[in-house]
Image 1 (cartoon, chains in turn cyan, orange):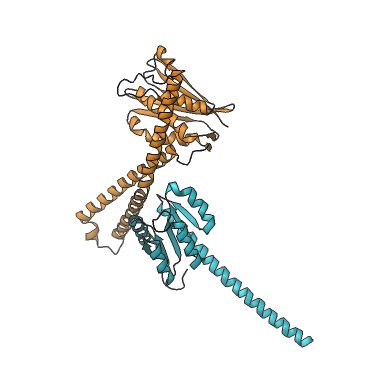
Image 2 (cartoon, rainbow over the protein chains, first blue to last red):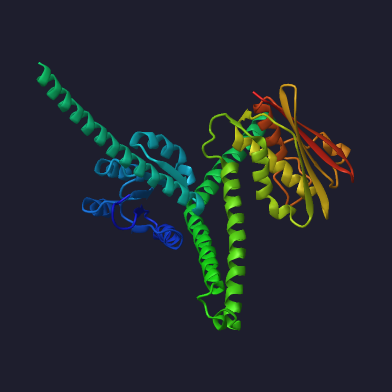
Length: 159
Length: 256
């Protein structure tokens, strides 16, 4: 989660109506800010100079499929949770691809808003945990380094 | 010999027709999935929004003359009712979509382990218009293991027998579906309280082309195809009928 400002979620679906539905839901029921794109290419451009906290993408899109799109998102921001939205006939392909690009979750259309909210919340929590874990690891590494320095000093004194 | 060729031709044509129909239905279901998803979600959003509005009207910040204004009361009532109605309509469409998906099972070109009750329930949803307000459906489902089969083809059998049963009942009636495991098989008994089948016809109902439904009735292929599908599954289909009492079709299907 960002240190300042609201949590931002990037939504990509070639169907404008899906974007409107999900962003209306998140607006009325959460404090998340949403950015919506019908074009995955434009969404990637946005990501070049703006980071987000979570990305949700449709699977079947004319420009680029959701798996490739989320794969590109992963290259830019490996820790940002990525969620795939699928129609039911794509399910099997989608599940296969989940392992390939390391998705956090997939959601089937028609989706349930309560489930969607839960999945987003858990995804964000996972990022938060990862970030705090990284901070802890850095602290431990620093402490180890300091200990090493002290040890060297002691050795030097007694040498 | 000649008759055999004709029979297998008719069978092939019918199964090809069913396959194309399945693909068509699957395609339509897939296409409407996204707009339905959207409508469904929008309805949910509206319900949440109106709930928030209601909470605001009921809170201390809202002037009483606004909350109790007849126009506000009327608008709120209409919104809540319409939202509720839409919610039920969306659920129903969703149910039909899932049933269509289970019925066509585009993924099922290979044998699979399936829950037969799920298939039966899906077909019941799809034939709802044949039954509603007229026929009471009694489900006496036993505990069945998953069965290895071609689900889309078995669904065809269920569909055929259930539609026949509904057609055999002219006014009000009862349709009973009973399932139970027996030895290495599962049994599905579908009985109706309809007009029954004449004794002289009973031996012919599985013959290809045999029909008593008259002009706007069927092709006379339905039950012969059901029998073929059951044989392909190393199972069988039996019939027992009493005039004016009703008919029982019993499907026997090996578990493995």
